[in-house]
Length: 375
Ligand SMILES: Nc1ncnc2c1ncn2[C@@H]1O[C@H](COP(=O)(O)OP(=O)(O)OP(=O)(O)O)[C@@H](O)[C@H]1O
Ligand SMILES: [Mg+2]
Image (cartoon, rainbow, N blue to C red; front, side, top):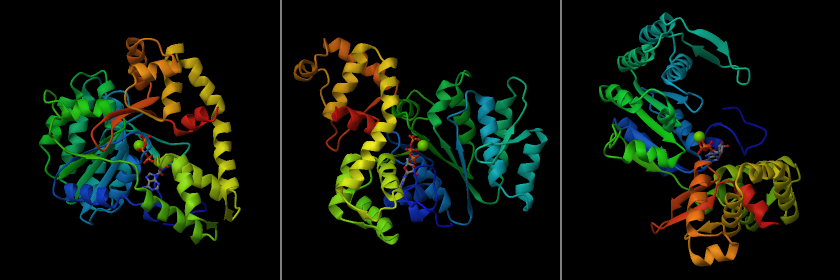
């Protein structure tokens, strides 16, 4: 891939040169897929799921074809069909006979083709009568089953199917998927509780249908080496201590690390010292301030108090404990529990397990946390 002007990318995937580590995860995913096992990828938001999926798809063996679709914008099966048709249309080459067969089928659905104003990529919209989407989805997958290459379909934000009005979408998809041998899947999702419901609940169709892969923050040493490499490569001087401090500030959370490095790099000042990076960090907070005030307007008083308290502490193990409640005057444990649930639903905080298996709560937005702590 062509080299880009700022090596710290903050959207999408630009090739392995700009992608840090994830070697083990990449191997696991590739091994699973090549051996015919579908895999469910879960992690908290903005940690690098989509990046990893794209990294893996870009490295599949030559007899494999990877198809990527993000179904976050879809609201029903008809829109799922459109996302699938668009992804297949953009990936499968027409030159080969089997490719032409699939594309001819998609064309037979008479899709309207428009172009995404942002990316310029084609978008297909198929006009279907009620109940027809299921049949067409099934047909597209059956065509892929007959494709000479092995096919890997990565469905990002897979938990979205739980919001479709069609009942039992998971049962319907599971039954088709079960009948496929040539097509494997990566199911990736950021709403962990929904993904767990889909894949870890014995009463649901997708139970034990795929291996699990949970990804965590990138190891500090590896991230530091990556950051150092890219600054140095472009003639910047940066001490390891500074890199560690930046990683710490961004809480090793991939998106925020990338964002901070991107800004520091963009100054063009090739002597990166404490003053320089801290100035960029505080600018990031200033830019977001208006959003943070909006948070307050969107929450009840109790929710706002709890959010601030968790932001202050960084990581909270016992949010309903006497000490925590007293320190931040949060009222009763019942109130805290209610607010906790509401904040999780709004994706303002998340819960996860530490290495010892202990449950904790933390604020999603690292910038918000730093802003709160600075007040
Ligand atoms: N291994 C990596 N090395 C460098 N940058 C990365 C890496 N993984 C992801 N990124 C970058 O970090 C940002 C967040 O990653 P990504 O969008 O993949 O996260 P995500 O977990 O899919 O987030 P969401 O839950 O919001 O969908 C992106 O800008 C991406 O380019
Ligand atoms: Mg993503």
